[in-house]
Image (tube, rainbow, N blue to C red; front, side):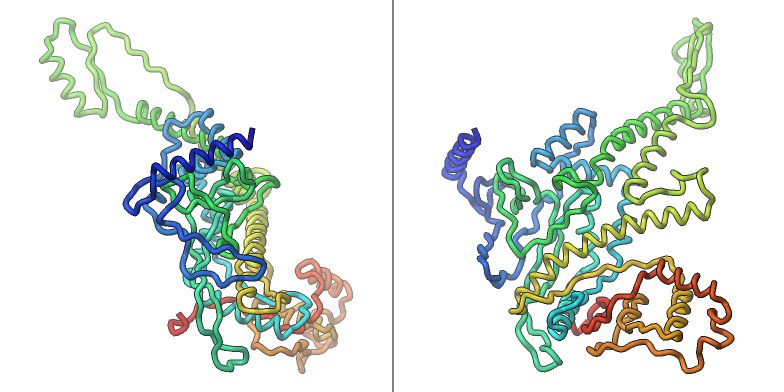
Length: 511
């Protein structure tokens, strides 16, 4: 059956190619496109990439069907089921409208992406490198390239769109340039990343007979799709569950809450429109003329937003939808919004109210949010290490070993002053603490020296000094050591390759 369908498709494609030939002015094309630069196929060895981008800016990127207009449970189920079969266009359109029409969801996604995207990346040599000098040279070169890249934080924020939609992609614009050689010895030719523009979600989908993700370069022709070119696109898959990426989107379970949210907001607005305005009515004699009724109605309309005139003896019954100080629609809206916040940010103060105290509520919320964001940052850093960083090293270094890794360290709530006192006390007691470990813990840039040094005790500090917190208290020593272990864990071995600092924005001359 599959072979028969494939042969039929090839026949139709050939027939359509003969009838609908590509032209530069045509709106729809069949089988080929004038917007697509076909990438060169790469073999086993890396091939110098072509400068520029494959995906061109298109008007069709802003075309979007209003899939939530008249949304029904059957339509939501159809969008989610069709995405499993490979066509993710309607599911992505649904997610886009969910962010537009659900303010609480949009804010939760924005906070999650902002907490991860605003972290300063740190590119460091790998642990235990085979060649420490080469590892440091690669890390320094990668830091230079990423510091000179245009709009890095914008790229990171757009790639983190995968938190809600499951996948997000960006295209690498490789450019040949002259860079400073090792040890500031002249210049050498290199391939760098000029920028990584985000690729609209409409360009990504799966095809019915291909398990790999497909790229649709020309949105005017959904029949034209190609395999994702090697060393050209960075695709970030956010893992909120195991399974196919089309089903791993965080917004899939929230689509049903969005359906309830839409209907509830509509009913709530109707209720407010009906019972939230002043109503005035009057009874007049049945023999009153139409002119008299219009005059009465005119006066009533000046007193209230809605007015009516009835015949004498008419009974008007007004039955409200709910009684009490709150509306059921308000409870439903808050419930759906709380579920969205829990899904994207963890426990919130509103969802955990009444269980713990106010201070513990804030700590629980911050801890759970940090855990979710840390996982997102870990996945994002791993994706960049395995794709853009590795490809950058392949194009510029012959040795494939000792490639650098990217880290996205987060700001912790720990007391830095207390930690510094503990480390100072342990160093004074004789603990050998490498300087690279201290630089990494306190996020202090290093001077660039390749030799590893140890922290030395202070000259006016000793274990018997009056100001030493360990003096005369064995129990306090156990507490401080236990606190150090719980906060930091055991210190790693000294790394001969010095850690490099965070990525700083390049100067105007570098740009």
